Picture 1: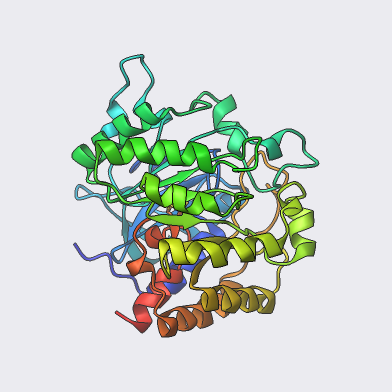
Picture 2: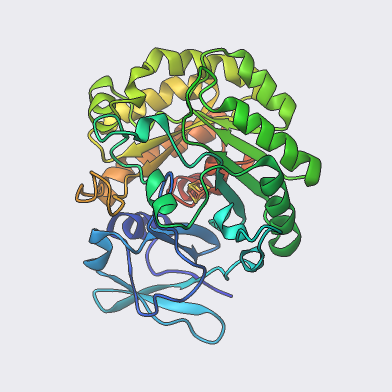
Length: 372
Ligand code: SF4
């Protein structure tokens, strides 16, 4: 099936991620994500072979110049910009594991969800020490919203995660798993619960796993995570300058940038070059140069910087914050992709996780253009 576009794919993806899209048929494709940790209020769309997350429930999306038409019998939809057809997209189907429930009656979709095309994603602890008060919470995060709305459970046990992971591999062919967590009390900052979860999943099914947490106080956790079955690690900066960090995430900014840099340096020898990554949200105030300078430092350490456009989530303090323009994203992603390809740190070589999935950014599409 040809899902080619009349715009360069990376530009169409950047525009869709900045502006969002209106849907003629909001029920088409898999259920969209609302609330939760990380990017939300999105729907997965496949464009030119790439599955990307496109905002559909955000304030900008309701004003978007992009309209995705009703899918045809083959599941293909035309996409229009200001009325003109600019390409075709397909909606990944609703995963089959969503129809199952655990023996004690919990829907599998409350334990883990499908991200992009083939990623199983879970937030092991749906609570966070940073989420207790609005003065400490990360301003972009909605980790408590899906819990409050009854779409997930507060703590997914290792046995539940193993059960759902096995089904998602067998029924839907998922190829890797992302385990993130709200930050609990304690110096391990979530590493202990992630290690227990990874051990259980690996005992049930052969599935590459990325774990994501704040840097644990003790670097020995990196070996413990690897020994438990974690293949790749995400330590997410979100913002790269102390000023923006303090404004956007006053609680998490108490862990200084130096701690992140020393954790990256300690984690890369454990997991390997390119298997440690970070998530950087562009559009929250860091300049292009500040982001690219940080990316250069990270790449020199062997860390993959996954730069994504900030997308506001309804109900968070930043719900009215604008998204970055496609031109701003292009000014970062084009040189970053060159830096990554030249350094041999490519999304396709990551074993598991957000950088490998790539659905929240056009970065891997830029990489593919340079090194098909
Ligand atoms: S990039 Fe990460 S957060 Fe985004 S869809 Fe993929 S796994 Fe989920």
